Image (cartoon, rainbow, N blue to C red; front, side, top):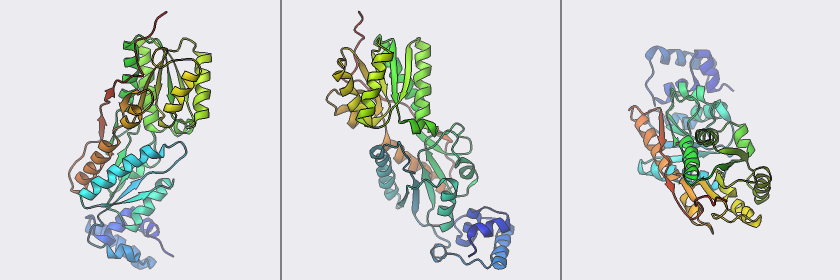
Length: 336
């Protein structure tokens, strides 16, 4: 069976260009249209019935690409998804949720169906293999997450580097000189996931400026892993008095583990976190945190996408400044 990718290869264009020649969703040159039509006739390609039904009109559907990879904290991801869906409905759009890890080929298949007008892409890596396609694609896209190089893209996220810096600077102002970062699960760093890498960069940069002693510890999302990290920290850094947590799943069990090991929060150990406000504020010891603005990021991602669908320009990178709320988990260092 001849596929749209076969037609694209034969005509020397992208699959999305073939799709637009069939649907009329985007303007293409007359010369390109004739070349595509000639390839369709020569190869005997027959468009999918659903694609034909969309000819000359928008689908009013956005794709939200959220590959549910190992190490992802699903409850937080769903906060982003709910915000995207509710904002899209205000613009009379539905949302198609795509959760498989399919990379560039998966994105091409979505475009080939002509079922969506645009897409939002999450779980962005610093050198994401999907970026070359997204830069050259006719299908509008917005990334929740900022790769190493944002040129030619539209991205939005919390400024995670500034968030890591703010947590360290807060602890330093309180007199803490030995601090640690308990971070995301190891596989998140192996994938070079942008937000996790930037927290480490900010944490390290601020600690270096303040001449603090530091360590970074990826942590699996389980109470047992939290306990093991707490034990390792107290063994390797006995002078530890400050911890930054960037792993929602282990925040509560980590605080519990430290207290079971004899450290009171905040009398002996100050704890800050990068996490949703509702998590930080509802723990037994409310935690000083940088808010994870899932609702705002999701809403603004859709607004950026609407701008692009209307043919208006959008900024390459939008970084939301970190907002810290001080709670009961941090206090001045109890110097000997």
